[in-house]
Length: 212
Image (cartoon, rainbow, N blue to C red; front, top):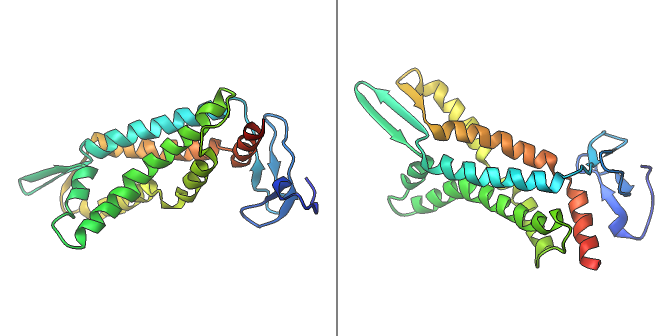
């Protein structure tokens, strides 16, 4: 896909890695368009991709519900034991003052934003998966889901817990609850969801369905 100058901005696509500018054309289903400079995949339409992404988004919401309220870790030290969920951890900061804001930020970054992103993706792709016109505000909803992506920090939370466990395991016995494994699965599902989503194809489909 060579470089091309055009006044039609709707036909331009910029590589998100190296900012190279191209004249976009929809490839055949199953083919991929890559950047000639850095080889980043720019467009990759796949058969049934919309339904697959919707299924993964639903999985994210179900896993997050369980991962929030089921026990995450239990610690046993010198005869004292305690088990806590992610919800309990967020409430631990609600003693008063500015700690309430910290509690809300913790819950939002770990739980609320990933769930909101999944809900927005389902709202956008639901009609498109069945060949129907997009629902009102679908373009704005998809833009919000993309803007929230850097703030969805479930995977950062899991990495932070893993680092903390290295230090805590020397002081106490740590047992993993069902929510721990749900969060581990959640990280994999989120990666699969983002990897299955061809954003250029979604924008193009939203535009075509709107004008048809």
